[in-house]
Image: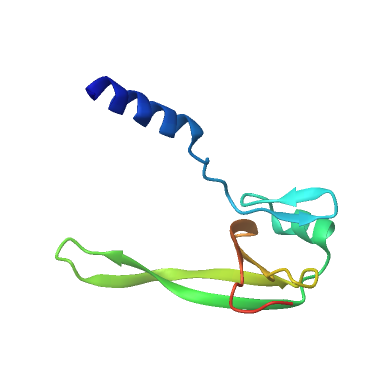
Length: 108
């Protein structure tokens, strides 16, 4: 009985769906986190919308209080896709694609 449970666990692990990062297809090229902004723009064209967000960056003192040490800027690009597909939202920090997700709250 114990051996069959171990075997079942091993088989389940082997056939488990691997987690995959989100990708966006632009023509015959896949865009994925780590790509730089100029490469994405060259492959996908200009986004339909852009938003720039500046946020404070904080550090923590030894006594637990925090203080602002600077700011960081994120840029969010929106790409409309074919009819019936969710729009793609690409988040860049420092010119690098950090996050790629799909706006499931609306359809193009």
